[in-house]
Image (cartoon, rainbow, N blue to C red; front, side, top):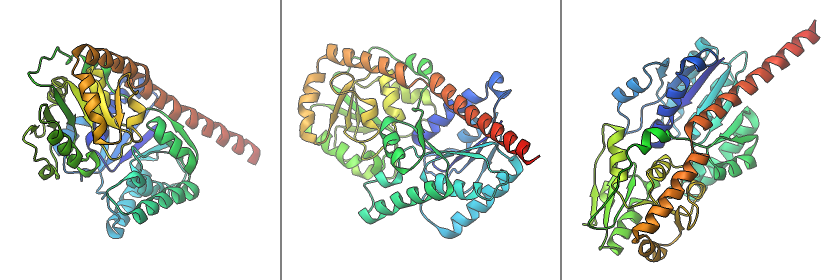
Length: 374
């Protein structure tokens, strides 16, 4: 069975997702059943092309220019290249990742004969964005609805909230994001900060809401804040008690920085299912996060952390978490929840089984139709 992944947004959490997915599907036993190909774009600013080539060194890949924004000339060129590459591969299954790949990939697949089975994972629907006008949000919703109805495919939601939205748009199932728990937990060490240290990991962009992160730091000058990463909106970070680490070349450095926190704070405006939050949970950090889709799928109120809507709510949560015993208790609960729901070994095995189930069902239907025609 040949499976092609098409990725427009290979950065942030999706990079980590594909790092783990690649390791799963390059296993010798799985290779006997599933041959994986990757068509990707490296347009995102935080992508290191050298790291990407290392990541996919064991899997056939083709780089195809895809832009996040709607651009008819660029999009037409991308579709043409996708069709050409897909015709060479002749895939049985095509899995599209992110809203833009969902559009371009489904158009490209419609030109193939025979037609592959198409899956699509939004990793956070574009119509959830809050940095665009309401009319644009509505437009993205109609695009999702149109392409689901007229081009088909099955949506694989990466979390519970995304699954609820996906069911409203068409045929959907859910396989949660997963992470490599054993690889991350070895970075868990005891922490003894002179000041309560609160941080976030990821790109400094509108989606992560650096303006609010900065406002929180100004509101609580008695605490130390840390932004693990960098990005185009770093000018929003002005509070004297915030340190920006910049990008790290090695993932282990990110884990070490997350481990050095007392509390993980996710100020996102919209999410799919945040990988960085899962990583913090494995490192036994209590998580405080905005009460939005995606975050609600990871944090259990008062059990693994807290969800908030207004900055005013944070005062009581920070006060509670000043107690190291409570932090340890919630952090332990967070790690247990990760093991139960977000283990990549379980979730990528479920993904593989989903591919196989639809592939064998399609093969059976084809055989039946062939027999009838004779």
